[in-house]
Image (cartoon, rainbow, N blue to C red; front, side, top):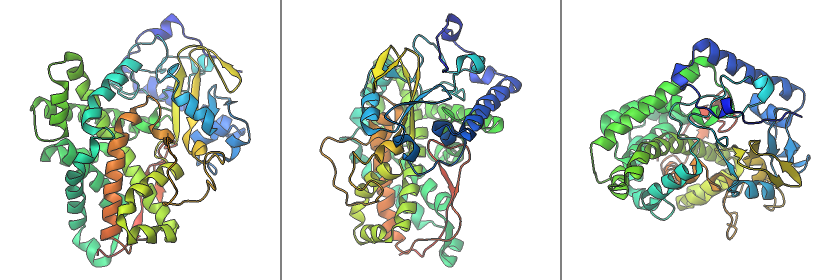
Length: 449
């Protein structure tokens, strides 16, 4: 069975992603991708998820016990109790213990280390903050865009979403044909995000194109992207960061960015964390909200009785969002690293072991929900239960309230303004997207109300 150990060389800072040559980076991406295909073809359920379309959520995982060891070296669970315990355990994090700088294994010999985590190096990686950095980020964001404070920005988000629906192209309005992702969901999410954060017009216009590339970062942590897509992704992330630096430098304003500046005040550490916070709120919240809304609408259209419930009462949108987060979560796998030895589900795990929580499988654990294979927006909320994508110390915990807000606003508006929405063609999803399964194109018809 493969094992991993941290050496002094591995703990040293790795070269920045931009400094890695195409030949070195391309070889690394192909090697890890090859592992996924080979072990997936041999029947490893985790490798199969990374290399191809997954089977029904949870089926092979629930049959193999609460924790299994993948041929890729990772410990994997789809068990609800084990997943919840792992995500709330401070002895797991998103970084290798003792490592500094970017979490990259481009120069490792993966044949020896079996490090298939952090598959794609990311520049200035806000997606792999140490625990202290994450706590600082959460403390900065919570007063402005936390579970209690986020609803204050609902009106700003609603205005932006309705502007998108008002402007649905004349040709689309005349024919009743449009692409749900390109013409409605992505513009609505980007517009509402820009309205809440107070991004100026030129930044808003550029952001839509950048997020199409930057959003790949959420999948790239476990799934190697093609070399050209990796370079485009890293360039987009760097450009988003540059644009947000300019917005922050403009000073206080009457929007969420201005409120974040006020919370940071003169605290140098908080000020230093602001660009990372805004990057996550832009890239991660934007991508996760777009995936959540599209998944919700696709599932609702596939369940006409549920779509009828929402159309009759658009204020059920938050309930539809919660059930979508359970049924088709935008984060389908969480990648963690043990920071010290621990015992999980009867298995002894050493420090620096890779652990993967398969979220969609855990959400359909029959011990957690009655009739888990049924999509039901009237499903009662369980007291004290948190959906797994928002549990634990991950970047999603910081952006989850904004994702929920945007998703509910867009769903409510679409149910109200496009009640005759219908699929009109094949749904296409982004390749190499095992974590988000991000929709690329959803041809639809439906006159505006």
